[in-house]
Image 1: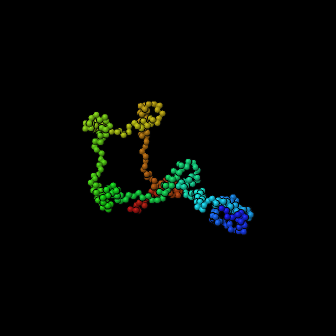
Image 2: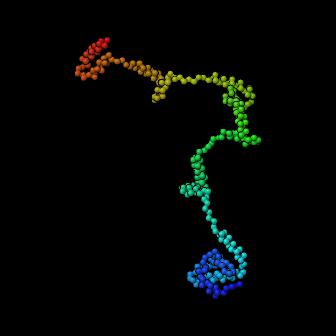
Image 3: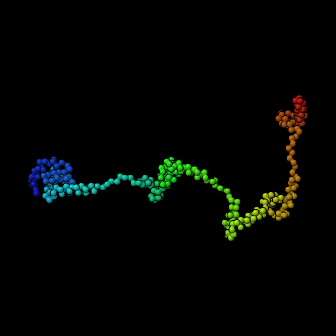
Length: 311
C-alpha cells in the first residue's frame, strides 16, 4: 500500500536533500533500505542536483512497490543471503610460502641446465648436508643403552632401576665366562683345503696321509736356487754388445786372451811421496831467486839443523 504520492515525496526530497547521507541502512515508514540495495539500483552517480533527486525518488518508489509484497522477515532473510553471496565472492588471498620456494628461487637463479625436478632433489640434499655439517652430531651410545634395550624387551615386571644392576651383573659374568677366540690355523688345514677341492672319492682320514706324503716328496725334490754368476758372463756381455760377426765359441777365447794382456800391462799405482817433496814445496813458496838445485842443499841443511836443535 502506498502512503506517499509522487508530489509529496518530491516536496520532502526538495526540502531535505542532505538527509540522504551514507549509512548502513536508509529507512522509511514501511521498511529499511540497505546501501547494497541502493547501490544495486543506481547505475552511476548523479551529475546534478535534479538528477540526484530523481534517482533517489526512483529508489524509494521501487522499494515501496517491493515492500507491498515482501514482509520484514523475508527482507531480513534476503539481506542475510545477499551478505553470504558477497562474502563467498570475496577471493581468499593465500599468503603462505610454498614448501619449495627456496628451491624454486635457487633454480631461477641457476643456469637451468637440468630440469627442475632433478635440481630440487640435489638442492635439498645439499641443504640437508649443510645443516648437518653446522651442528655437532652426537653418535655416542649411552652407557646403559644395552640395559635399556633388554628392559624394553622384557616383561617389565620390575622397574628399570631394579632391572639395570641385575642385567649388568649378568653381562659381566657372561664376558668373564667367554674363552679367548682361537685364531690359529689347524695343522692339517692345507690337507683339508686340498680335500675340499678334490672329488672326495675317499674319506678325509684316508686322504690326509697320502696328501702329506706327497707334499713331503715335493719339498725334498725341490732344488736350491742357483744365484751364482757364470764364469764367462763378462765374455757373454761383451759378445752381446759386439757386432756378433763371429760365434760366441770363437769370440770367447779371443776376449779372455785380450783381457789377460790388459791386466798384465797395467802397472801398480805409485802412491809414495818423493824424498825431496818438502824441499820442492818450500822452493815453490819461496821467491825462487836461485835455482831448485842450489836451493835444495841449503833447505836440507837447515832442516837437519832444526831437527837436531829440537832434540
